[in-house]
Amino acid sequence: MLAIILFLLVISAFSFFAAFRLDRTFESTISISCMGIVLILFLCGMVNLLGAGWIVVCLAAVGLYIYTFYWIGKNGVVHTIKKNLFNLITPGAVIFIVMSILIAYFNQDRLAMHTDEFSHWLDTVVIMTGIDAFGTAPDSTAIFPSYPPAMSLFQYLLEKINMTVTGDFSEWKVYYAYQLLAVAVMIWFAQMKELPVSKKLAGIISWPICLFVPLYFFAEVYSSLYIDPFLGVLGGCGFAAISITKKKDWVYSVYVTMLCAVLTLSKDVGIYLALFISLYYFVDFGSRNKAVGLQRNIKNVVKYGGNCMLPMLAMIVAKLLWKIELAVSSTEQKFSQPFDIAGTIETIKGNGSEFYTTVYDNFRQAITYRYIYYERLGFNYTSIMVLLVIAYVCLHVSLYRRGILNKVPAVAGAIIPGVAIIAYILSMFPLYISRFVEEEAVNLASFDRYCGIMFLTGLLLMFWLLRDMLIDADGKVLPVVLACLMLLSVQHSKKDDIDYYVSRQSVEASQEYRQAINVLAAEINATCEEDARILVVGDVSDNPYVPILSTISKPRWFMESSIYFNATPDENGEVGMSVEEFKELLKSNFDYVAIYSPTGAITENYSSVFIEGSKAEALQVYKVDSKGNLYQ
Image 1: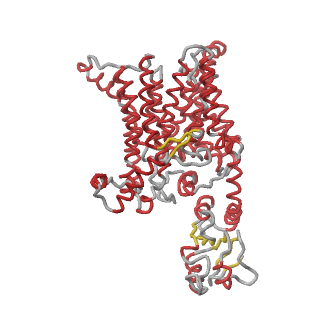
Image 2 (image 1 turned 180 degrees about the vertical axis):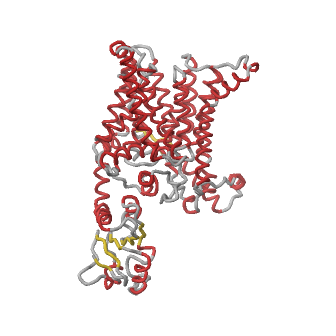
Image 3 (image 1 turned 120 degrees about the vertical axis):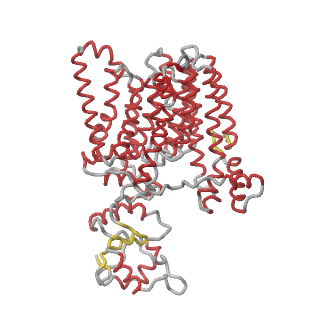
């Protein structure tokens, strides 16, 4: 746990400094600190200094602590602590500390078990910690190197600290960093220092609901590394911050600006959400700060325009920098084909090809017949979109009447998020016909996950707006009672998913899933050289053992046996490759054979390749000799 403690100290350094030197509360700056670290590491990676970047971040944290202690001593310890201590010890800080402990407990010893984690989300972090560079680097083995690296950078920092302390890579800490960054973004809405006790209590009780909301669209959000839920968290928090933040000063502007940059650098679709958040920020800023008399002073015009467009500029710069990185590294961007607009229009008119028409019909059925449940009450995707739009209108009318928003931003807040959600969902049809292979498009591959990004954005925004209205409600007892009822209701509706996580059943399931493959990986890591080429034998129906081995036994190179021959003999007793051909394959291409599970091919057809005294056994590694024979 020393690595976790050091990591928390590093990411909290700016908040400690800001509490005393800038008179800012912990919860108003911890999200800025975390997102700022991501952006600093990104800039370091852009100039090939990622390995030095994490050290600079840690040294800067130490410097902030030293300077803050010096400043406290210089200005009078008793006076300074008395004045600023409660910027550091706040409800938000307590929530963050409690969550950092609980996340560690609930995730300790967790192992990855989802295919996409080994094809990218975990694999990329392993690669980055090994080469101290982005997945776009020449010596990288990343499968999807064009995916932006924001979350991977935060995970990278924790893993580098952990490797410095323990010498090893720790899988469960990748989950810890993911979940802690999401909490840090949402802790912005725990700013309650100036509220009376009753309203603080209502705010504290209702805040944990934000942790349950993602479960409606991503049941495995706390046991996987998919980036999609994090995008929804960023999107919902970005819109909500503009709508309900009362004190819109430079800290608020930095929060929204950094959030848009991190959104853009989290996944390609993030720039879509960042664009709408930036637009909403622009409208709100312009409404609050009238451009009077600026035409006579070019300096003021530039300053005003820059302040209006800070989030949009951050989004554009982040996107351009990543495009430069892809261009310099000659990395092809995945899923970047342009939409077939003409084909989309023709299909909607009823004149599309058979493929386009099939996808269109499946898409319409999906948004009509797929449901999200609250208790026993089901809502299809179309009704969710309609209800969210209605909710935004009603809630922003409330914000206007309470004097939190002016008329123009209230109208913008009622319209812009709804337009963003609906436009994205409807754009899924041209997305599938333009960027997916036919089989995946027809089956609407990952449709629920992609839609979940927008629905989570929408529902989280609605929750923050409702919670703000609850905290502002008259009375001392009623808001607290309503907060308790809201929390209990949401918790009960997702009780099974919550219990699965907090009981650590998901951790136990991951360990059971990985038990056999970890035994084989340990044997490979102990036996095989780092540049070894290894053929892995197993049944194709088994779990994805090759991607797992490729991640946890880097930098060794693996290939699955099914590429060359069948797992079981056919009716003629053949598997597609003779014994001599098999031996030639081994001799020419591989250094070792690793057996995950003995197949009929290896035990029957190729039993003669094993030197006397050796036989095919599960979870064993065999050396290839100069004749293509195998021995232990």
